[in-house]
Image (tube, rainbow, N blue to C red; front, side):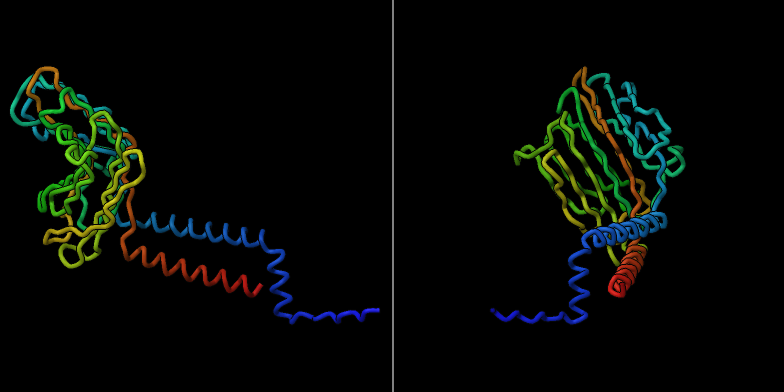
Length: 298
C-alpha cells in the first residue's frame, strides 16, 4: 500500500489570500462600482464649483457687418435664446450682387440670451457645435463657425468656408491650424455636417505669465481629429474680456445667392480651473487610499 502524502497546511496569510481570490469577483465588482460612484460625486462637486460661466442661453447679434442691408435675414430661434444646448439657424438671402459681406453672431449668455457674457482671461470651457453650411453659390466666400470676440486681443476664429473648403483656425493670438482644404483634397464641402469644438483652459494667473491653452477638434464623420492643447501666442497669453459663440458671414455677386448655417446641439460646458482640478486629484487619491486600506483590513 502506497503511503499517503501528508497534507501541507497553508500559512494563515496564504489561506486568507486564497479565500479572497476564489470568492471575491463579485466583491471586486461592487468595490469598483462604489469607487466609480465616489468619483462621479467628486466630479459633480468639481463641476458645481467650476470658475467659469453658467451659460443658460445665447444672445442674437445680427448685422455686425451689414453691406447688404436689404437682405432677408432669418435667425431661428429669433432670440433671446434661453437654452443651452441650443440648435440655431442663421439664414441670409441677399438682394443681388454687392461689395463686402453681412455677418451675424450668436453669443453665449448667462441671462437667458438677453446679453452676451464677457469672459475673463482665465475662464475655462468646452464649446461645441455640429455645423452644416449651405449657400446659393460657393463664390464669393460664405463662412461659418465658432468665434472668440475680444476688443483687446482681437477675434479668434474656427471656421469652414465655401470657396476654398478650408477648415481652419486663426486670429486673435490663437494658434493657426489647417485641418483641410480643397487644394489638399480634404476640404469642407458645403452641405456636409461637421463637428467643430474648442477646449479652452485658463493659465490661472491673469494676463501674462502662464499662457492659456486652446485645443481645436473636429469630426467630419470618421472620428475626432484634434490639435491637442496649444498655447496662445499673444502677449497676454490668452483672450481678454472676450465673448464666445457662433456666426455666419457671406457676400454675393448674383441674384439668388444666400448663406445658411445650421448649428445643431450648440453646447457650452464650464471646465474647472487647474487649481480646482489639482484639489480634485488630491482628494481622489486620498479617497482611493482609504478604500484600499479598508479592503486590506477586511
